[in-house]
Image 1 (cartoon, rainbow, N blue to C red):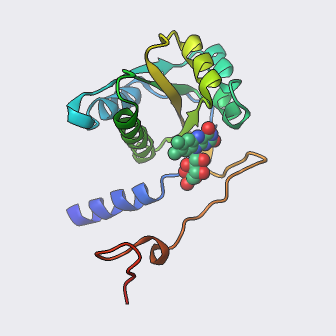
Image 2 (image 1 turned 180 degrees about the vertical axis):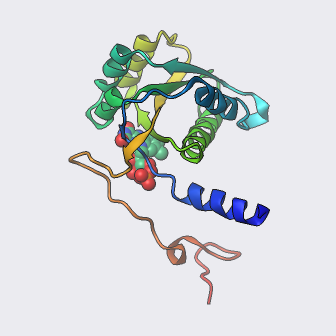
Length: 183
Ligand SMILES: Cc1cc2nc3c(=O)[nH]c(=O)nc-3n(C[C@H](O)[C@H](O)[C@H](O)COP(=O)(O)O)c2cc1C
């Protein structure tokens, strides 16, 4: 039974896709708390926990964020987004930490029956715009929000959508030394 649960969880993790279209239903408060707890407990470099989170539910704010860059215009239709605000002290390790917390939010959302999508502000000027909107001081770093809601689809609906699918393991995995393939 435990084994079945683990297999189901791993299968669900493998199927986590970017959800960009959401129903209008709000994310229940207890579900949001669960997601924030997952974020809070994410591991980070030296356990520095170099983050704060801004929960954005104001439709006007979501709309303004969505207008920073065309590839994130779908954020306007999300019931909620969580902005990840970093300390801005170590770009490399914070980038790793930001990726970890983002992915955990996306996985947790999926396991709870929701869907999420990471939305990057873009270049330096667009980042500055995002930070100004969210009241984040220039010295702190913020690159993205994770939008969350009940997904209508996880199909990429954008006109310039990314190609789906993944490279096969045979092209990705080496043994002992890079390039040494199995068999
Ligand atoms: C660093 C990073 C930035 C991303 N920025 C955006 C973005 O701005 N807009 C967007 O729609 N998706 C964005 N994505 C999501 C990727 O496009 C998506 O994960 C990828 O195409 C694979 O699709 P899937 O997650 O549905 O499997 C970003 C992903 C990463 C890791």
